[in-house]
View 1 (tube, rainbow, N blue to C red):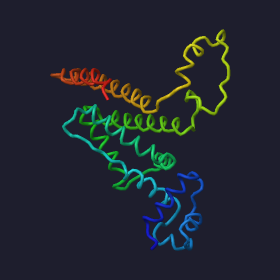
View 2: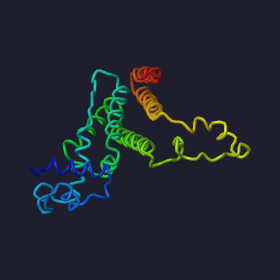
View 3: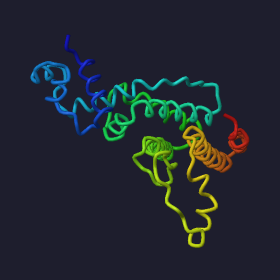
View 4: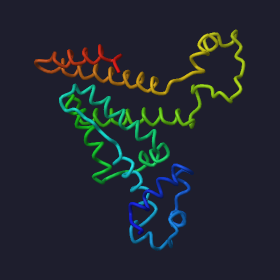
Length: 230
């Protein structure tokens, strides 16, 4: 039986195989073995279908948020949750970041992330900029992992390694073993900790600037000391 869920699932599967450019109402109809006009009873247009794909992917994010945890840990939890779904649906995640979402499914992760940042003491503008920063970081990490942006990515086992003249590039030559290897999980956690600790410093400075400040600084120090733990 044809329904919206089947149509969206077919679109997600097609995007993951061939990319978003492959999506058309005619192609999805062919994938499902139905007439193209029957799709319009459930999805009014290709744009609406891509919106539905983005919302479907976002709805799969599983947050195990702990309201009692320090805000820095909640940020880590949310960033990791987004990364997990992005890693599972890399091409569909590119659709997510290209759409302006207004549905409950699309806005719920945004609401949770912004609420966490506001509770940490950041004003509205800062909270939005920090959320955008984390999205950019997760998506950038994802692009490197799936091989879209090879610069500074590890050398593949099947790729020929060009010789580097140590006289011209002494530092690159020295650090070549590090450039040729990469643990994506460790790389992501390293960058995540840098971002969280920078945010903690900013939060502490904001708290200290207010009357009775000081608690924010202690919270920032706790986040900094806990940065290495995973």
